Length: 614
Image (tube, rainbow, N blue to C red; front, side, top):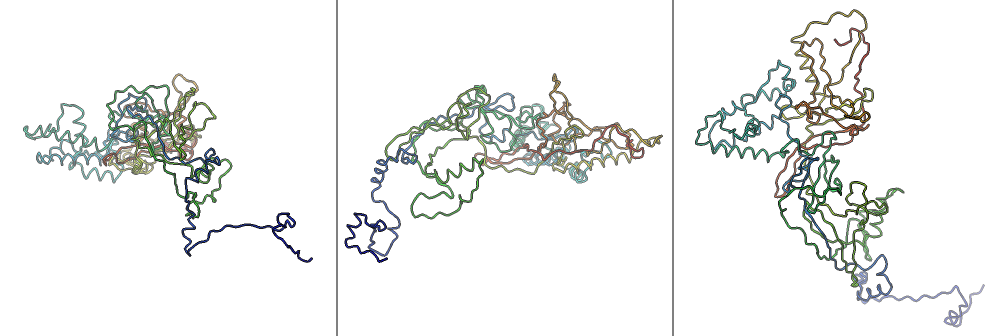
């Protein structure tokens, strides 16, 4: 087919004689130089013209409205003024101590039954006293005689704490009669105001006043060295629940309560608003520092983050965050929200800096934002509304205790906590497991403290103690058992359970025929041909010895030991506070266990007479 001949191309296009023929007009900038850097920047000569075009096209009415140019924020702040540990008497809030230390502090244990423990701290206190006493004179021998280290008799059962472990015995024997027990002096000074450090010494009476000053410094030094509750009964630790409970109040009447804190990391989500309480009723002194003014002005700054998509032309991204590689599931709401924020609305977020002091609650009344076109918008909290409204959207807000239909609490909580805590090796480690075959719960002491201050695996310590008692029986055995008259023997109990397994038996809650709680029990120490009266195996950890030294029973709520068990440990914590002040305390943590177990404990069975226990 011959090609068509078009005489007048302009007329042919206007009359659309040949629809397949199309003409484009292209406008190009003609550079006047060989340098293209300025042309590639796509500079805008008149930004005001661009803004007016945005307004003319209605873009300021859409989602991508005008950017904020100026903002004012209206807030209401209140400081913490009260603290209440585990339902005890409230007290003024201590601003000089991190909140973790106030809540988690546990008393240091210096006696376990009749045996003195924590030898390392006792010697440390003794050395500190001798340092202070140098200005008075050399009275070392007198204080060693009055407050010395006792060496137990290895032939007595009461010496098992020290004599059962060879390394502990060596350390105690090395300092017995040579070093001073500083804790004994500390207790002597605190037990009675009439006690003085110079009692039973040859210190001249003219220096007694100086010794009293040194004694005050010595007591204050130890209390600053380790943070401990003034009254062990007024601590936040609840032994029945194996967790902490406390409440703080802010000036203005609001109370924030932590019902179940055991994580070791205290943050805002551990506390709930107690709407039924109006303050803790403490008259606290005026807090130090000023609160932020109720109204402040800001210049908003665009939000930026690693991997953020650039909103400008001709900009290459650094590819540190690959959003295309994110593969969320259909129910992974958090990941979907993150992707939507990063890809769609990233350049729509702005920062408004607001400096707040620690230990405060702050409610943002609203934001007055002025955009680049001069429009002013009043913005309130997105989560405002009734707390029981299930259609209300809210994230990172405080929960309200109870089911009353109250207004949602949208305050921002800034706790006086620290970002980093150094934690030592566990001093005590207890694993609570369920034994379905024996129908009980076992508290397994996987790590126990020794009298010299160190810790040891619980099974090794149990084996050492067992061998010590067996050695005592071997040196002084009782009469042999009578010869069996039958090949079989009735056995009441077969106890092959290690001594670091402490039983907890189910008992009824008083005045309740259905609810069950767990009570600490004890297994007998059965040793063949032992002439001494039968003794009970007692726990070595302070976690399981709760109330034992006072002759009180110890109960644990059954729901605190789920089928997976519970893992509780105690360790020293260390951190720094204002002006670099060092704070050290002994704290406990609880985690989920790893399942149940079986002890092999049996009752009421027949066994060969040769194998049965006497």
